[in-house]
Amino acid sequence: MAAPAARYLSAMLAMSLTWEIAQLPLYTLWVEGTPGEIAFAVLHCTGGDATIAAAALAVAILLTRSWYWPIQGWRRVTMVATVMGLGYTVFSEWMNVDLRQSWTYTAAMPRLPPWGTGLAPFLQWLLLPPLAMLAVRPPARPFAR
Image (tube, rainbow, N blue to C red; front, side, top):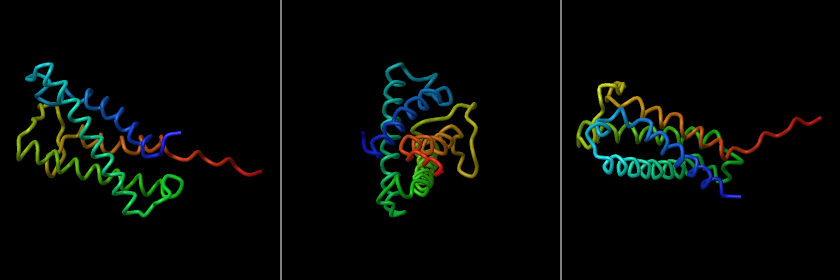
């Protein structure tokens, strides 16, 4: 059986790839980019997502001192990893959309105050880490009779 971190990161990678493809129409690249540029962006962003997920997981385990995760501390690690990924995403979207102008949202992308973070990347990091954590959650114990 694969280690819990490997299962978590595999689930995050698969879900992130799907999410990146699904949210493409919310970025101007979808209309302005060549097929090669779009494919590169999807792979690049998915790789970035995997890196964020790995770093957030490591920080979560260290901050919560959940050395026996996921058997002990599954909820704490899930919450901290989600907050870490979400926090980095809010910062990265602000920096890359507003400051560096590395990418641009279309008018269809809802933006959240106060920094104008796109709703799609915000939801990605709010929802995917907890869903991926289900891949490593210990099975529920049956009721004792």
